[in-house]
Length: 415
Image 1 (spheres, rainbow, N blue to C red):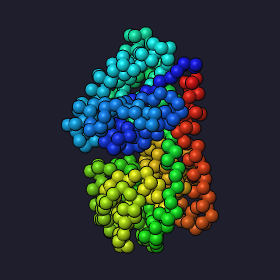
Image 2: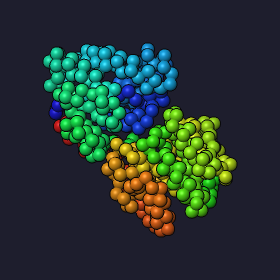
Image 3: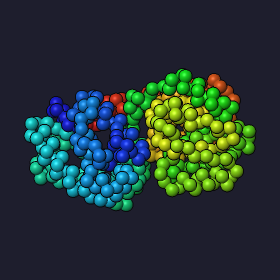
Image 4: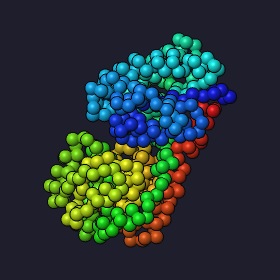
């Protein structure tokens, strides 16, 4: 590839449209694709986008290709609504179009290309694209990576064929170890954060946040409603802290999963006072107004999506952010918290960026007392908390997408 003009193509179900956002993968894809475009690469993102937007759009140097729109029009609940039909269409129709309309004209002009595909939904598309390139005699001019962010769909992957078609990458040493049981020796290329993730909230907004919740110990959790995210442990943690007169308030933002009702019912059964609220708008102002009248509330579940500025305020202003999953391939929420100088409490699986007690709290067990003990020590020495917040922010600076691309991705490709 060295010396040739390079096209970059990212294949993913999730992407930057709200319709295509379902979790951390959308954040990864949006940040990676934008950073590649900003680095000067001709970058194309092929994703299952909003059916009501243009099929092709150029945005700040990034070329967006919204696929499966004709199917998505019948499935209004987001990217994974109707996923089997979308997956089949993506695998059958996208590779021929990408190959013949975009890739081959570029390769015929002596260019080269990088393909990066994400998660099990794109495996069949990778295999199809590999076959097309082999057939047309240009496979040697294309580097193809397939990245795994989680274990979803592992039982549906043709691992031997995939190994022959693409270089397998993953996001942490923890995930690399899991892949070894499938005889896959994956290359670790970490997740990163976009430059916007490092913007500190306005001091006035932080003061307003803390004034509204004065006298409370604010614990935040943003994750899917999923047992692996240790939601029930978080509820037990709040109950334990309340018994120790910490006056905790858990600010929870889950997803659309039905398990959320089980979590909130458990909280109520434990004697905690629970409320659910939708925000009037995504603005910081309406977020702050949504925190009024919580004096006797122990758990507030936010029903509205949180925009980046609101997330930054919440992560920075909280006393701690619980991101301690049982199974965490990487831990974007923990890193996002550190990026804005927050106190992240993570687990001990894929969070390669943490040094316990130095830049984050690390909870090793399901026992809520584990977090309570770590938190008590931190709060008992304000200088330690300030040092941890500063160290977390310094660490997160090393995970900018621009640095991940320069230090980890490009050297692997000799670009």
